[in-house]
Length: 319
Image (cartoon, rainbow, N blue to C red; front, side, top):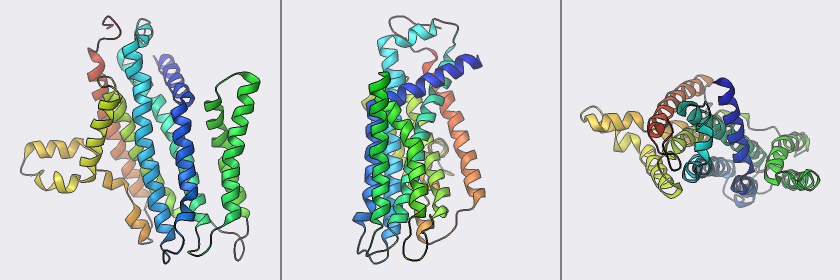
């Protein structure tokens, strides 16, 4: 069972990384985050706050869209085309199939969040002054993206393998190295340190992306891409207003109480206000947030298994 689970997860992750939309979302997010410092000049010492808020929003929204698209391609399209039937015809049961798909999609989303997190730290470092930006750091950042694309192109030309996957893997290696180089570039007096206090907030946003990814994967067993996007958008919007829309009625109304418990409260993962107030995010809060996400992941995994239990695969049902 564990061997089948590993192979399904690995193949799902590789399929996600090979999709052109994955590279498009990664490059779009990195470019937008990298350009944020140039859009926050002359804002009366609020440039860091604007960069942090915009970068975290880009990471959250991009991860959500990528999660839905990856899940729809990996599960919904395989079910409709009958490809999943070939795998389920082997000694692989449905829970293992769904769990492997979930783990593979989570691995792809983690890579996206990691790259966005590195880009966010670089953007904050570049936007250290309201009247001036670190052009050298900005140049190194975008040069790393161009070099990664070049590496992917050369790898594709030499081996005839996936350009998209090679470029993404090159970004995972080259972008952190570029961040180390940028850290050594002198600015004002000495070198500019990274805002490590932002890292816990980025981890919490990653938790939110994981939760959205699991939900999208569970729903993709029954819904197509458009319907999945709409349902996830509704859950996301209700979760943003969870305390106001559901929380105040949870004690008096049983339906509101159930919805308040099963719909993630996204505000718990959004620490922009705490960062703006220059408050540190305790590691204990990050740990409790991880436990909160694990419970939701377990719930959505069970939901996905239940939705897929009697789902017709291809032209015939495979038990």
